[in-house]
Amino acid sequence: MPKPTNHCPNQLQVTCAMADTCHNGTRTVDAYRAHVEAFNEAKRGIKLGAVERCLFYALLEQANILKWPESFTVDSGTLVYLSGCSRSSCLRARGELRTAGLISYEESTGNLSGTYRLTVVK
Image (cartoon, rainbow, N blue to C red; front, side, top):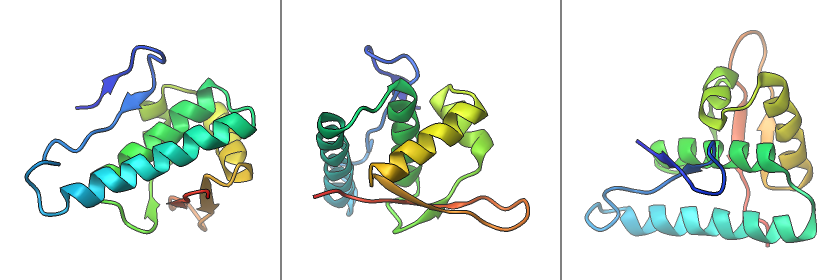
């Protein structure tokens, strides 16, 4: 189970427990590192608040759990739970992360979950 980090109680620290032994451990660690580095670079250029950081790390956790698919779906309730933020805050933060180019999001029809894609900003 991910643990909260010291600097943001709701920010989850994602690790691959099997990184040293699983066949795709290097890919997992490299993908995680690439997204974190892109996020840190984006934070220097634009203002991203605590909610945006917590939502980004919640999405990063989902991608890690799913073994880094190109895109994935996750319901808003899960993101609210993982980020520790309200639904309205998560929706606003999602817009900020999209504007920053860190994620793409495609809404679905009906009650289905939307599709997220983490993008690495160069």
